[in-house]
Length: 389
Ligand SMILES: NC(=O)c1ccc[n+]([C@@H]2O[C@H](COP(=O)([O-])OP(=O)(O)OC[C@H]3O[C@@H](n4cnc5c(N)ncnc54)[C@H](OP(=O)(O)O)[C@@H]3O)[C@@H](O)[C@H]2O)c1
Image (cartoon, rainbow, N blue to C red; front, side, top):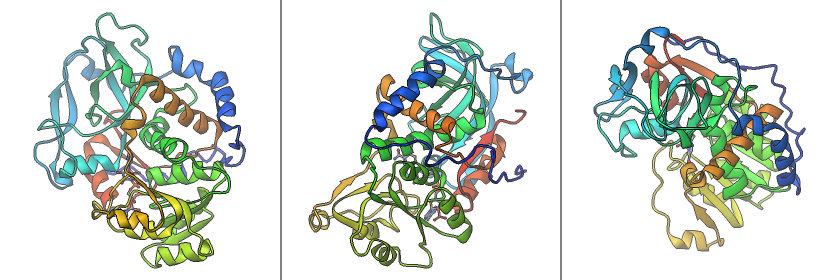
């Protein structure tokens, strides 16, 4: 059964999109902000009241429930099974998940667009949970800590999982676990896209495809806060309203309008500095056409399919830059991970980013969540909640 849809979750998080100035001194401002708010969040143990563990029955047993994939295919290959996860070894922790983020990458692995390293495998790359055991000799993490992770290792669609301690970050006490699970992977993706891959500045015009999606919603808010003019594309009027609310100055219904023509009109033929394109096949060529001279084509996903090969002459026509970045390559070191996560949590805490948890499903119903994500029915973040939590 699908839980009731939550719309405009957290009304009380006021959307202060212009309250945090990100001008030329943005980094030093950020560092000051982090010095004030982050040590408690990232260095020391989390003392938040985390509430009781989800269900006490499984604490005794080594078997936990998890989603497993035995063969590639549609949502129906996601099976709800008992799995044994064992105990944490050196450098590892065991985490009892409170909330699991659903990401389009989970669909790619389920279908085989990306290859899982084992079969069967448990999908999922984003979760927030409570540490229930630590490996021998491990310091810096303790039972009861509330932690979040995003990226490798895969296996978040489980009531409990083993993780390398160096892959998790503490969740600031002020941030709800469900919000944290909605913003860890998607928020860090937005961070590296606007702050590292192509640095968005005041005066830039940016084009964001799938502007009402999980990453898209955060990307638009962040680019707006950095002072850019934001153009977003979406498939429906409802999504258009959300994108406007998230700071898009112009919204294009790309199933009804030709987005290249519209971007040309909006920019008076000048084009945009950067396109953040996660749609891939259906938008790639048009995205190149929207760029100004020396513009940046950032293709970071392929929700509609893998784009066709690009010829160098297509880039030479306007001296364009093309990159196909991945979050994992922007959070390689522990410092990079902490810095990226801390910017996200700081912006959530400050109200610069409003996290839209528009859909929650019980973990056992992951197949329904995949169906809805793939059929473009969802907007904002989608979260899976372990049964009994
Ligand atoms: N490179 C990285 O490190 C990285 C990290 C995170 C995410 N990503 C990528 O970012 C994208 C967004 O991820 P997300 O989890 O936040 O998903 P999402 O954007 O919430 O969902 C995908 C959206 O893409 C749009 N879309 C357009 N054509 C589609 C099609 N044929 N089938 C399905 N959707 C289509 C839909 O929005 P409309 O209905 O408005 O068209 C849909 O809601 C994905 O491509 C993902 O792979 C990349």
